[in-house]
Image 1: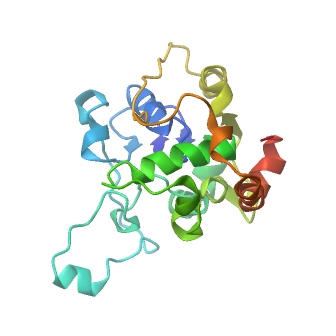
Image 2: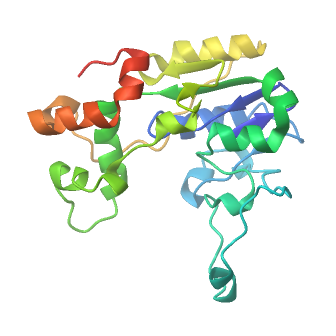
Length: 231
């Protein structure tokens, strides 16, 4: 997640939409007062100077760390809401933290991806460190772990609250469109990072049975309807 006061934009980071690459690109143009949230140590290396800044926040709505975790001295992770601003932060929380004035004046954007294609990418991402990789069907049997919450990140009360949601399938052109709308004239290249090494190049459709195809259609009905995605 990036909030630039210098260029007056807010970028909301969704899952499996080249978001790490977009963050790396946008961090190059951020000023000293802009907010750049941290990510994993491995992915931070793709940013110039491993840049993350101004994400700590003293605000009454920032969740406090559970007392037990503090007593046990459990480490606070970069993705915990208690840090203030964090990656994959939902729009409603950003709006609450920055206030109506900034929220209404700044250009807000994000990206989405075909949910069936995205699910395959998510499967490889979530199972990459396992010694024994479960089947795609087994992975999706646990919705709590398999569900990708992108739609909830860029909507409030199930309605998109951003100025623009670009499509992963049209990444370069839609990124250029967002940059133009912000008013940035310099050329910004998107680096290729955080790409799964395991993904089968034959395409996402091969992973689905009729049942799992229809199950994804049910899980992700809102974004499928919003963007007209087809299997």
